[in-house]
Length: 124
Image 1: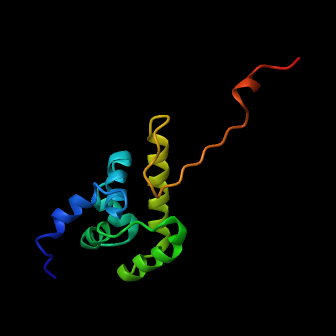
Image 2: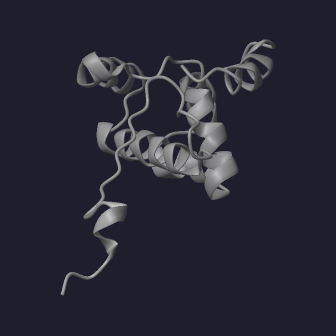
Image 3: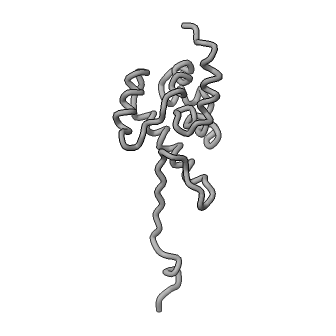
């Protein structure tokens, strides 16, 4: 199958939009050094399929399972590797942001503290 001429430029453009899987793939490259070949192997798909996936919207939090199923059914992928990739990259994005700067919309960031700063002093 011959790929359309517009596909590669569209994939590059998708990397700039936080609402696409292309952004997730680009961030996996920047934060983890993942190549397209690495990502395709991780997801169990071809490089061509990876390009088409890049154009998809990221699953929205309130309908994550439904959106994930639509994507994985369309491209005949196992859902778990894609979920793991999305969540891992979202976590890396959230924890790589400077303090006070929010992560991109659609991602989730959680942090836990076991004590307040005032509790650092030892009680005698």
